[in-house]
Amino acid sequence: MQIKVINQSTNPTPSYETVASAGMDIRAFLEDTVVIKPFERQLIPTGLFMEIPVGYEVQIRPRSGLALKHGITVLNSPGTIDADYRGEVKVLLINLSDKHFEINNGDRIAQMIVAKHEQAGWLEVEVLSTTERGAGGYGHTGLQ
Ligand SMILES: O=c1ccn([C@H]2C[C@H](O)[C@@H](COP(=O)(O)OP(=O)(O)OP(=O)(O)O)O2)c(=O)[nH]1
Ligand SMILES: [Mg+2]
Image (cartoon, rainbow, N blue to C red):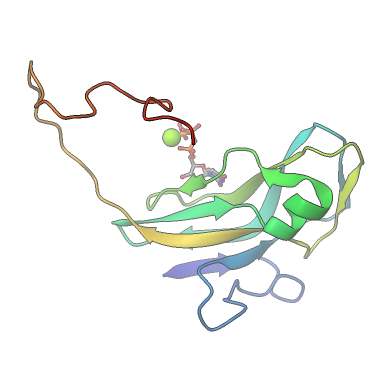
């Protein structure tokens, strides 16, 4: 995959932290400190531009440590980076705690997963096949 990284000195190319990690952490790319107030959201730049092969996507997911310790999560999780997107990857964070949260340049704010996906085509029909579930959902099999 191809990637353009704006500031390698503070924000090195994302990499896997352990041998079998699924996600690569991604860092904030900021000139000034950003403060997210309680229950506010902010779109955080990363300084990363990607060329993802067709048939793959990048998912932007929260870091569990930030969620547990600070109530910081990705509002649109998992964010979708399309293979034909050439703009800067940004991370939409929300602060679900009752305290201000500060982000500085280079902070690891989220993680990205590279995943294969299908592109489906539709065959339009009037009637679908029957199943045991039918239209049941939303806990119709019981909650415990
Ligand atoms: O967390 C995210 C989500 C999206 N994007 C970029 C890459 C993605 O390919 C593009 C569009 O994202 P999405 O399809 O989720 O947004 P939309 O509201 O449907 O916008 P569009 O109409 O541009 O598709 O925005 C990000 O940088 N970060
Ligand atoms: Mg879209």
